Length: 559
Image (cartoon, rainbow, N blue to C red; front, side):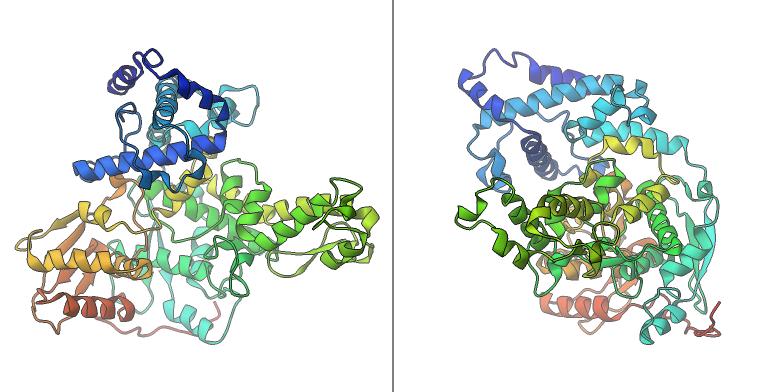
């Protein structure tokens, strides 16, 4: 009722007192512009939330209650949104106001929509899914949270992990992944009933025992196991993901930090491994156990039922995309050879293989059709070659993405996923990639005698603000066992705690308790000493249990 009345107030006289000149911009609107508009107003809502100090209320920034007609839109917030530049501010506000009204109407019908029909073009669920980029996340979460609660059937599982075995395998150069923490968890969890892993929000789907270590898992060991398997997945030690082509040879294009499913990993075991990755994603969504994974839209789009396009290919392989675009230009006209900068019959063979093959994302040769390595690719077959090349690039990691989606669907209700954009699903699985210190501070409490006004506490926030992204990530791993913050303040089931230290001098290191998301912070006398000691701790202190050495553990056991 509050949401409805707020938006209705916004919409009163929606068109009566608006400058008629803004309507000339209305025909220009495209879905991409709407996406940028949504991100812009989300950013505005986040700034308002910070200014009002309401991170602690445990809610996402409210877009449905944002007074759209009155908000300021400064130039600095518009800079990242090139499609919106040059459009009058009043037009931007009016467009967002109409989106607010749409969301109020959707809110009233959402409980009655059967999203199991989302793939049927005639259904209301399908039409709503087509508008997923216009539906506020807070609206989607109403239906999502309700169904997650209804389908929570798990009670958790006990697992035993042999960390020394995983480390020893890496030292030996074993890239099969069979000794990794990921594979050990796969063997112990993938073949249990998925219902046992569908735990309530904030609960742990498994409890960890590290072989030979004395630590008790009150949450820290679990989070450490999640962080460790994510590190392994994005490394050469597990053959499931590879760096995107844009990161090779010095790097070119965007998203150079991303990892793609390995196109060569197609065996039955690999496909089963990918399904387990999907289960881990579902577990992350259910319990806000963020996965520190950097995957491109080529992976996320199929998970929400969205269509992969050539722009997604460009996002990971700008060179291959450019070559495909150049070839496409040659088909525009029969006189392409006469056009400056175009491709002609003579130059065509300099740009493409002379057979029906391509180079895949993993740098290996791929046949575009049966026996393609023995079929000549000529100027006359360029249209067929281009068509097959596009299809192959779009589908190159489809088997792996389908396996991930299958695993994801065993943990969360996959019928509802088309309601989300791929960016929203990524945020639900991986949390906030950039670690916002204001966001962390708003979800912090201080254990007496420590107070937020203490000089050493103020100094801590200054040091963290000065840290780069990698240093902030290491700090979060040091105090919590995971490397990302939840996207939703409500998912902070534990607040970060700053405790007093037994020893207080500039030579003492901070002590963390990952199970309880806390740190014993000495009262350093100056910022330089604090920065030095924190950096040393977060880069050198990786042991989960300093009370016990790894004893009586068989590092070399093949089982």
